[in-house]
Amino acid sequence: MEKLSYASESSTSPWVTYLRQIDRVAPHLGDLAHWIETLRHPKRALIVDIPLQMDDGTIRHFEGYRVQHNLSRGPGKGGVRYHPDVDLNEVMALSAWMTIKCAALNLPYGGAKGGIRVDPFSLSEGELERLTRRYTSEIGLIIGPQKDIPAPDVGTNGKVMAWMMDTYSMNHGTTITGVVTGKPIHLGGSLGREKATGRGVFITGCEVAKRSGIEIEGAKIALQGFGNVGSEAARLFEKAGARIVAVQDHSATLYNEAGIDLTELTVWQAESKQIAGFPGAQEIAKEEFWTLQMDILIPAALEGQITRERAENLSCKLVLEGANGPTYPEADDVLAERGILVVPDVICNAGGVTVSYFEWVQDMASFFWSEEEINQRMDKIITDAIAHVCDKAEEKNCSLRTSAYIVACERILLARKDRGIYPG
Ligand code: NAD
Image (tube, rainbow, N blue to C red; front, side, top):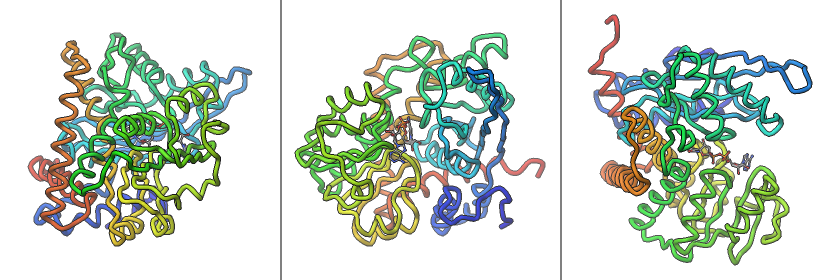
């Protein structure tokens, strides 16, 4: 394989993590493995410079990205991240995980992802809007409802999607709602989208717990990330009788053996924009989070969180990957040896892209479904997908991650094989 000049050498980089996951699936793919090299190369990567006039009149430049990893099965699909650590390597990996996720769920999409290296909390609302509009214009060449459909990710939300949709529409002279998903409901958004990813974490978690004899009622859960994904997943587990004993975000790590009251924590976070200082729990050291006694761990913040060392010390039965890429491959091995089950990101957090798919379909048809219909359809797709992945794991005697990658890669590479290489 040619070395990719833009891939970081670091063995802990997200792209290297992804490549190592692909290496693991190759031996299971039979003749289709002939085509696997395509998954080791993003189809298209765009780096854009975004000049921004700040409120004080100065001008700052930000770097933005949009990567389309693979489009064999349909238009690209994937979120846009605003975070100070965003770089090309990370966006490449996130786009590749979208390729795998969409195929594992059998959604008619390829994988893409975008981002800007910026701390969105350091900008005023006006600066954030101008940044978003210029970024959207810059990547406007390669996005579109039939080309590549962005959505929210860490640091972006429905408001950012509304600005993206409006900018793209202004540049095309007509309203095109289907260019992004995760929009506000009154602008072509879908009911159920905001809570979908957390809901998917809950559904896949319950399904795997049931198959492995793990009780949800009374289970002790530790959660990293109290944002869109983590807070909704935790709320559903709490409703099902589990106890959320620890919550960590960028500001603090909270612990309460009796269970943290999520309603109170939500109110606290809405007011102070972080969980630090919450009076209903004790604050503990950040690293202590990984050594707590728990039944279920839900990483729902950033990638690269479960290292080999943390995996060796983890005391839980089940890991539900709400975040993308939270576990290093060597940590996966340790968890497997220790009998700790991992529901991989590409299935566990796929509820969001599933309802994004519904949003795109509704925008195309200009006909909108009820929340009940959306949740029913989503529950069926996610439950069928996780059941298929569990069955395949039993058949192949492999981890749920490798099984999900087998299911996905077979679909992608079959599409690739039948399309062939142009011009041949
Ligand atoms: P969010 O911005 O709403 O929340 C992120 C949370 O992570 C916040 O609570 C933040 O404080 C916390 N966090 C940030 N840095 C941290 C650190 N260093 N240590 C501990 N906590 C930290 O983001 P989100 O939409 O909930 O996304 C979370 C994860 O889920 C990401 O990996 C994202 O790619 C993935 N994901 C999101 C969706 C979606 O629909 N939003 C879908 C699929 C996957």
